[in-house]
Amino acid sequence: MLMSISSLVFNSFFQKVLSDPQKRAISDQYGEEGLKDIPPPGSTVCTFKNGCNGNGFNPRNAEDIFAEFFGSSPFGFGSSGPGRSTTFPPDGGIFGGFGGTDNIFRTCSEGTVPRKPPPVESKLPCSLEELYSGSTRKMKISRTVVNCSWQVQESEILTIEIKPGWKKGTKITFPDKGNEQPNQLPADLVFIIDEKPHDFYKRDGNDLVVNKRMSLADALGGTTVDLVTLDGRNLSLSVADIINPGYELVVPIEGMPIAKEAGNRGDLWIKFDVKFPRRLTPEQQAGLKRALGG
Image 1 (spheres, one colour):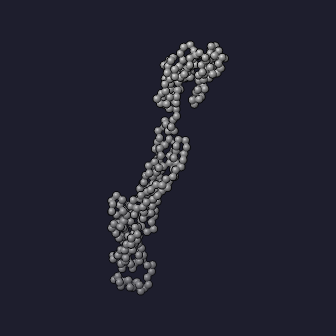
Image 2: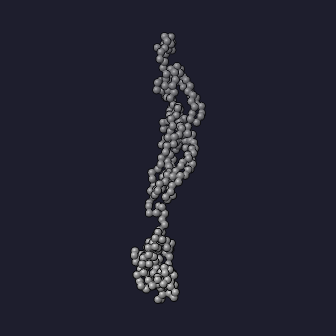
Image 3: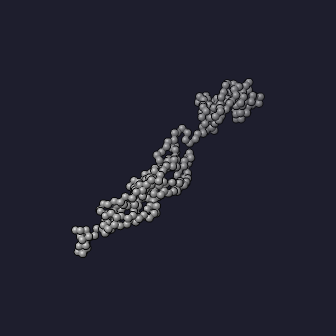
């Protein structure tokens, strides 16, 4: 850009000189060099620093010619008439902005206000065992990073500490770990806990629910329920009550951990499904009547 401006200024200056008979004579005598910074013999040496004085050759400063055409100098030089001294502005001298102090070399985001895009959300499926006891997950992510006009892919491993008792919908946020776009701040990366179905237990808030099917004989004569808990313990429960259809047994503090109440847990609910026989022999019917007093 500076070379284009310099060419424009010099061409304009060259045309003005050739239209002047005296300066045309200098051109004929000394050639092109006589029209630049090299003065003819006997003339005063002219520089950007001290200007020209006396009756010698005085090539005009490029900034003056440019100012005639455009009303201001692109170089940011100060001036005070003949004999003036050229000073560089504090913000970079000749690389200063047009008629001011702004640098012409701008950053890729200058003049824009970066905005924060919506977070990037992703589900994190977890087993009921993980949500019962807690676990640590290592997640490898790959994201786009923008640097001015080019983009690169970078990888990173994120560590997620799953706390005991976390529920479906719990969010874990990693600020500024999402993809970048031009003129935008990096998005936040959000993982949302999702609960995988379990083969035996079902979660109900902080409680656990299990369905247990048993025969009519066990329902009437008493039984023992054996369970393996989510943290691997063997739980044996004796049931002496007569189990009617719809009967439920509540086992305190054998449910899910309560995340905001350290050491506290919900309850375990056992719901029984009594399996009735489809048919009985005459002897079985008679025996049940005698046993039940019917």
